[in-house]
Length: 256
Image (cartoon, rainbow, N blue to C red; front, top):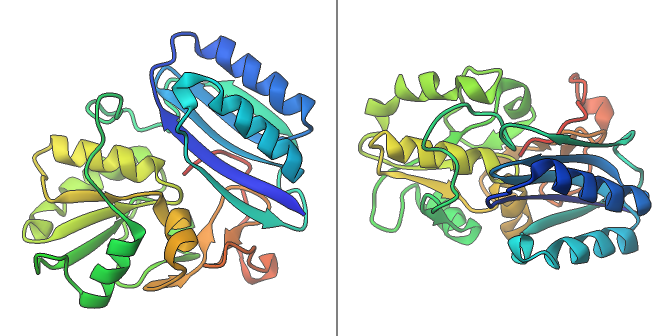
């Protein structure tokens, strides 16, 4: 079996190219495939390979004090979902192009998967406020599945999210808004930016959909979660969905 990991971590990186080269060489020596993105704000990676090789890579990454507490989400697949290994330096580890969105000095408040599952069952948060689940992914992704009743946005790229959100903010003023995405990185940026716009009722789902699946399964979720590799989408058990059931073409890119 192939072990697949997804991980990101916001932390200042003084020499992104040097770190990118180091991680690329280490992953290549371990015969891993996937995508590594490095920016001045941190790292974002999706990698797959033999379980022992993945463990060695993660252990080496955590030996760096900057990444000692990086959270890694893992799943298994019968085949290698990536065609090659890529490592790039980018202006951002996920392109958003908005100020007040890089959580280097603090995150937006989070809700755990367990708490969100409880809120979904109640239809409200613990204080009785109505719940709005905000999908920060694009329409290609949420076509495979999303939380039941979630607010989805008519966007094709994450950079289009601000305009779409601002057009709806008044309708959410009386609610607790929980932003979510695949693995946490986009909903983390989105929630921080939204709070900077005065939307102090916004939280983020800690760990994204994949973290939710891992912690509580598919309660309240309809369908599968699109992923950016050859598996196309994962079900709530983190198993690949039959690609023949999808009309979408998978992309080999790192997003979360």
